Length: 405
Image (cartoon, rainbow, N blue to C red):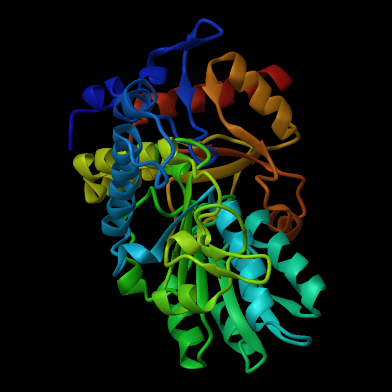
């Protein structure tokens, strides 16, 4: 791995100050910062070959189209999909899940059918399925969790039945950092011929993702979670499913032939890419994947594991601080509360010290309800963070406590 100083130099924003203090950015679970190479890729699109993709016969359009499809191939390689046709660009994780919830629901779901999610889900992997259940008369079933923030696998096996039509679970809890036993979940579902969608929004940037090895039917993630631009995401689907499912949006580029009597649809993956796609962001995402590959995904995972251990030890030693989510299998995210101090007060005071953390429910209100709390303070750490920044966070927390004392 590159020297940490070199890595941090790749991210221009990390050198700025907030309230005249060096920025300490621990809100990577919400969005990651962007390396200069991604910024440069976006600049190059807009300054040298910006033109709508797939529709022009001129040089700029050809160049733009080639770069967009090259980005699709980078995604395919990064997640180890079998074919580029299995990679669909979307607006993000939320857009991908909503699309499948509508499309899968229209094609396969009838009254009384069941969809399984876990208690750890982000709202984006709850609400679309609730909407689909209301529309189709289906039932949402939930895998419960224990106080360590882990799913109770035996309870999952109990609710998995002939009524189950789809399992949709997160790879990693955004609120607690818990890594779910995805392979076991998929194997159990496939044993009763149930497809599985994996929400990879918090998993894609923290280690190796191999959709072939996982054998998931769908895998979704957002570009901005893995050092890429906002407004771009990926829906991976096995060719079998994408061929059978109807498109969830209509418009240009997803059509083959249009008449007032009937419309036929384009081949995969374009069947699911209606309208003008966010091709600059897709190209930027390709650049982000190049950057992550260049740093080394194994090295990134090892560094983040080291930082998590350091941060956990450091914060655990602070009197009156309670960590939520203590699974032995988790990413570098720590959710915590300070005794008798509201999370918003803590977050705002840390902000004045230049330390960016996330406060609230993290769009995972059922998780908070499980613990009987209104929210947590979340420090989400990634490979460009340092032990010195963790020391600054710990010192900041101690200062917050002293102020309230």
